[in-house]
Image (cartoon, rainbow, N blue to C red):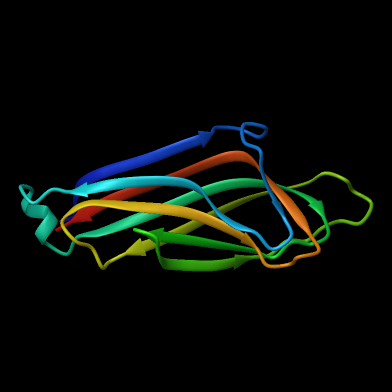
Length: 143
């Protein structure tokens, strides 16, 4: 039976318009962080412990057709990446998208685990803005 060990979350923006993080050209940066604690005093921390990571973020395309790479890092080292696709409609000036990412970290250590959510725009001729919502959560499970 799985046991919830710890939960961590960051709510940067609960809705559209709550964030304003601009990605012009080929830029990558951390947009949210969260952490969980695999407490050595909790027996579940020793039994197949893993951390489920969920990200939810909304973007507005401002120029071109961005190629967005989603990265999740643990202590600054990448443990997950994916490219999200966009379809920009010609003649429409406000293209909004909502993305979700799900990752599982099965390579855990005891103690506090720090995670970062980062985005990168691979196309240097395009731009987008993270406008919200922007939510990043981590759930530690053992057993």
